[in-house]
Amino acid sequence: MPQELTLTDQNFKDEIKQGITLVDFWAPWCGPCQQQGPIIEELAKEVENAKVGKLNVDNNQITAQEFGVMSIPTLIIFKDGNPIETLVGVHQKEDLKKKIQDIAK
Image: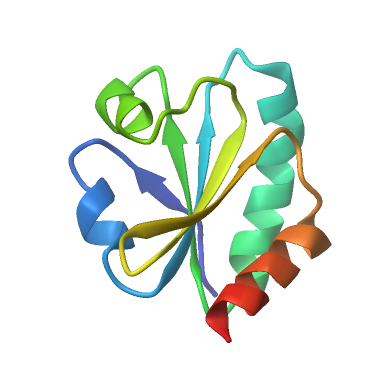
């Protein structure tokens, strides 16, 4: 069963370079991030055509700055290392699943 990835400044580029990866940019002190967290965990177990990861912006500021993350939670869907779609705020699992499926087509 797929699990969500823990992403860092060190492993980020390797993890997103192939296929589709949804990345949740978050921080432990962020209220909306606490709402998004369980949705991301469920999504990671359910999607088979994509990887799902989380990047703590407090601990990994280089990557967060590189992608212009100003508000959290920010979700970015990457395909083969390139950002395809950026979503800010809390998003429901079914919406995220549909976006991943659309990109996978």
